[in-house]
Image: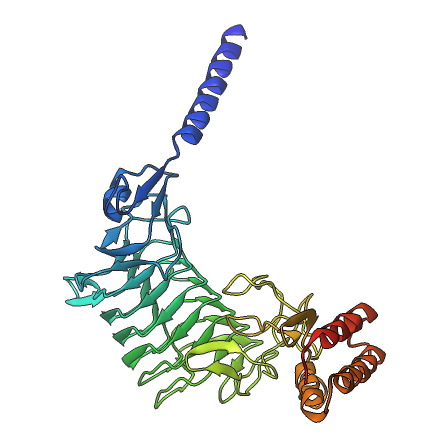
Length: 421
């Protein structure tokens, strides 16, 4: 018994030592001008499991491979400042050694890749990111300007990566312009992403699914082009689409969604041309425009999604918001989430240079509080009349329970301070 106790004690102590050693030895390897490493790949090569490769601003002309390592490769200041340029020399980023969720790519622009050449097929795959039997996390990235025979942006081949808060734009391929999901098990999770302006000369402008089951939640898929399936192409696949917008894609067959031998389950989504499913709508989402896919006031996508198994923040980290001027037509515990990658952000009532801190609500006639206050400013001859006009408006809004007494006083205070007219 004593011997057994001693063996167990030694085993316990050794386990604790190993755990402590692992914690102590987790390191941050810095990459950039004047840093210990000047290329991302050299830092990856030197990294141990649990380490972070921290990349400073700059353009890194290289092709990187995680080589099966459970490490985080992260930029300091995000995708706009940190670019990995593949120099048209293969896939820009490769996960092909059974990487799992411990392998994280965070905050890069991935561009100018032309795919991994598969000799037995004689074709290239995954211009931007190549995932093969791997399921990493790809977050806060912009994948743009890549090309390949199959999948310009991110290929998920026998893979189930988590793709979140990413922009996949202006990639090209014969099959799968933006994201390609192929062959079970291939069940990527795609959340809070914009998939826009991608082109496939054959199938799947935005997303291509062949024997795959991706979960697509709160994504905006627009402006993509293909022969079949401008937005999403499905063959022998069962994708789940929720809280998403598919609008303004182009294809002779299946403008938004094309499917055969299976099909998607779509709920609480805005699909141009319509699609059967709970909570789905067919209405112009009213984007800001000119490549800006935020929603504008009056969008039918506001407060129309479901909170069930949906992200609590949008692509930019903004919390879900209940617009009190819009009826909640969504589902779940909180039926006011918005469709698409961006939650509508209301502005405040602002008079001159004074921000009242009160939300600029839309009124029943379609005008906003700011619109009504501006009408006061344009319709009176002196400052006193303007203040009186605003007071009448705010008294009415308080009676309608659109604002509280404190909010009314805040707006009136701004009106009194303003040099209007």
